[in-house]
Image (cartoon, rainbow, N blue to C red; front, side, top):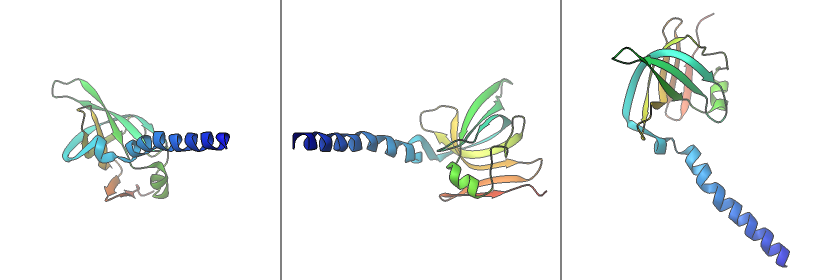
Length: 138
């Protein structure tokens, strides 16, 4: 019985330890402020098509003329795959425009609501909780 009690206590402890991590991962509103929308134009430096949330790093010219690196978080990878995005959708050197929710902590980071690549008409939009993508015509 003592071994059973320890196993139960360990299981309960594991649940309580993991709950804050799960909550933190899914709390986009806790990290980004939807009331503070930011518009950027920049060049893709890297695109990481990873789980749970793919992200971009882009270089944006500041008013002073120097490049600032921004980190852009997208919707979850499985939903992006379902609407046609792949690891090759965005490439270093692509010029993009983006609008998104600013990071609450003041970092150069945002949660993407809309991303466009004007050269070929690619458009990503976060509509409610679902992504929508318009792929370039082939």
